[in-house]
Image 1 (cartoon, rainbow, N blue to C red):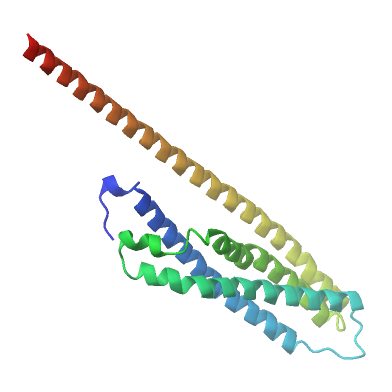
Image 2 (tube, helix red, strand yellow; image 1 turned 180 degrees about the horizontal axis):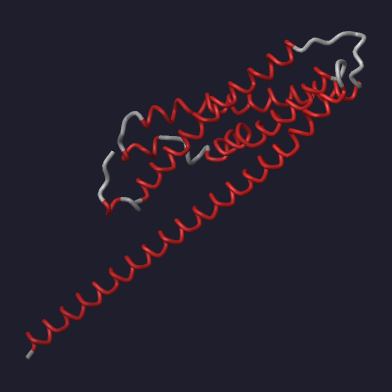
Amino acid sequence: MSQSGDGLHTPSYLSWRKLQLSRAKLKASSKTSALLSGFAMVAMVEVQLSTETKVPTEMLIAFAVCTTLLVAVHMLALMISTCILPNIEAVCNLHSISLVHESPHERLHWYIEVAWAFSTLLGLILFLIEIAILCWVKFYDFSEVAAWSACVVLIPVLIVFLAFAVHFYRSLVAHKYEVTVSGIRELELLKEQIESTDIEGRNGSMLQSTTHIV
């Protein structure tokens, strides 16, 4: 969709950009949640446990709780995405900025952010923890060293993941702040131009009236 430079900062165009961003977030959330929840279900079904296993009971409880939380979090994100995305897609496919107010993306903004956070941040952290617990449950009966090795390898990976998530969200907030400040400055310049134009118009009309009186 083409837009002239003058219309890039209009309320309708800004709302259209938010609409496209919300659409992309919901699509990513639905795909990620469906994929990871499927992996978690397969891991829980395919794991082989026996009554003579040496795996500590606490680890089995942790495995059950983590798997349930992982599936529940991703299912919640998937449900939100599935419910909201068709309404947004219907407006996006019309390719008309004038109809952007018919989309519920601004009213349901917090639901979209919750789905995005559950699918990307919380869901991925639970998935990494799930891998560590699954390796412990799977290999503990054969080799305790292998179970500990999986946990040791995943600890730095989890730290790097959290560091990247914090850095990404801070950079995103800083970018939004800079864009907002830039928009405010442009509005102030536009206000000053309008006020100067009004003053010049008033001065011109006063000079014309003075000339007529003389």
